[in-house]
Image 1: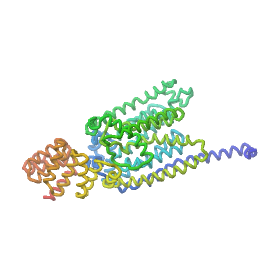
Image 2: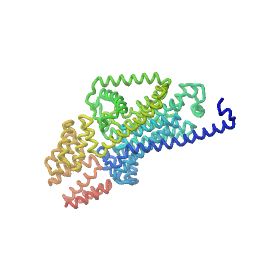
Image 3: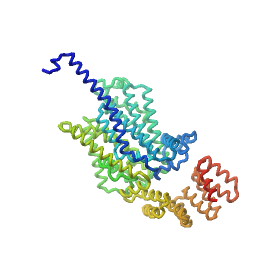
Image 4: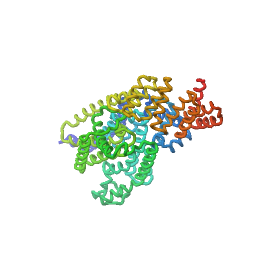
Length: 601
């Protein structure tokens, strides 16, 4: 006979009550403890970013050479953020976040990096809490959040200032899911508008979030179970059942889709605006440059490559060069793998819904950036996995315990495996973060792990020349020209180096070559004009400066030199007009250039 039975019901009730209180206290303590642990390990992995510099690959576009962002939160700059498609995107909240950093910290790169790191930590914490709320599983949710926080593939999104849009948009992505879970508990208009608001803010940070309505439908399937209302003939969620007013399975799904029509509308509008902005900015590559069969081959191989890099994060680089032709065995192997996994997911997903949800999450969220519409010249990018990998994490974290459910020592295995995995990720991530210290370390690493990487050669040469290391930069840029002989920007870079070395004839030849390749290259026109001005060929210089400001009316340096050239020929009225324009565009630069010219004279 049990001792509790012998001691009587009152004592039993007291023991049970005490046990419940202890368990409740442990549960209340566990969540903040896991949160603090997530913060600590993420800081350990990424703390090196506080000493990093800006890099010369898009950081100039977003911060260091963007005078509107550097102006901080002014009425003019905020208006520009909401009306501009600068950088071939419409993402006003991303611009505002950079403006806030500049207003608070100036151009101190360490604080800009820390802002991105804090957003990444917030994302990991929110992911943990929202998964815990949806599934009720503390440990599995925390495991996924730790994978998200520490995986080396996410370094690119966190350690690159220009990719602030990744961490910022994901913050609103997870906030949207949180708002949606809140809405499903008691559907009403106010809660639904909160979902719409969060989603809208996410789209204004990065348009890759257009797949959100699709993800919410997946969550309706698992873990929320909203798709099973009526199908099982039971009331899993009475509020949901009442709001949908459906009982048949087909009708339930129709209601769930209909419920998200406003969200699909926002996604469609964002997609159209993004395509327009990217096409206008010249980021969309034509089918002549990247034929459809090449794109499809790269899509198939990229889907599998991302999985490979998730399992074995090795030879990570920025950027990955687009292959001229992928071997047929790679394309066939990737196709076979994707089809096989999909068949297995369909088969086992009937009993384990998380497999279906995780796999479709991964495939679906990569669609906007997988390369069917090719943006830029990279084959793939680590930053594109920031959200999609969550789907694969779900499959693994819920699937592996199910596979080992009958094994006696599974808990010991889980603890040891988790410790080894996370320690390995921390070390690899710290090493990967180190490569992002500055442009030179980053692109030297890229050249070590990739081949025929034109962009890396070009950016490394530009970084070396920026430090005055011209003799190192010239052979690097020469290799870039061998890889892409008709690249006007490389000729322009070589021209700038020659001009700084005092080789004006050589510089003039480089700028002229760049203009023969690309006649509407504003920077080359301005640089050639500066050489001609130096040679006393003022009228020819004016023609090039005029062409530069015609191509790019907001080109401050060209306006300055055009005004200066007008002064040299005595046309003070025209000079005054150019300086007025310059002051309107960038008053700080106008002052700096004027002081620099006065010192030279």
